[in-house]
Length: 285
Image 1 (tube, rainbow, N blue to C red):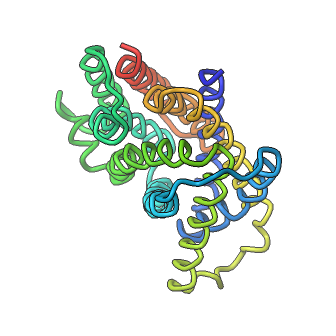
Image 2: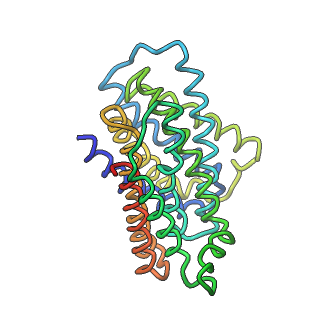
């Protein structure tokens, strides 16, 4: 069951990214993040009303706050990456999360992986190489292009943050339940984003009311994605679930072409598939 849930999360995550990219073209990453998480909360509250509250571990609040801070940082950075780069050159680089989790999962939750990880790392690098082909000449050209692509480099940083935050999710859910933790952490994230919006005086940005439906839509997709993700995490190993979640690399290339008319789609598609193969090898190899 967790396998199906994780694959659904991968698709919905790409839809969420496409919706967020359209919004951040007109609004700041902090304002977009605030509305996305605010409108995700009602969806999560419905799930909570069905499951009920849970007994919380003594350290639940501290670890949840840590998760909220990491998720705010990652979301703001990712939304900024959407603002400066193609969807197909940002989301696929989140596929490096399982690579970073080779270390973080072992340290934080005691999960270990097999020798297939080496082949997976090579496939990830090959996929990243193909995403940048044609931007710089020479065999090292794609790596030079990657270093110059601000959006891709930010996405790599976000992938590392998620490698830590995902393990916090696993620990917090195990010490509450799949419905309680998302509501609490999203409430904290919403409050942190609101503080940033007020501090930066972004609440007066033009066009907010005209785009409320867009904010509502991105929040609803985020809420549904989070529910399915929390259920998957509660049922299966976190590293495998994150691996399947990263099939969003494929869908982001598809949506990048269909929605934003991004170019070089065939090469990007092959690169995204290499990255997904790498993720699967790291997780299942």
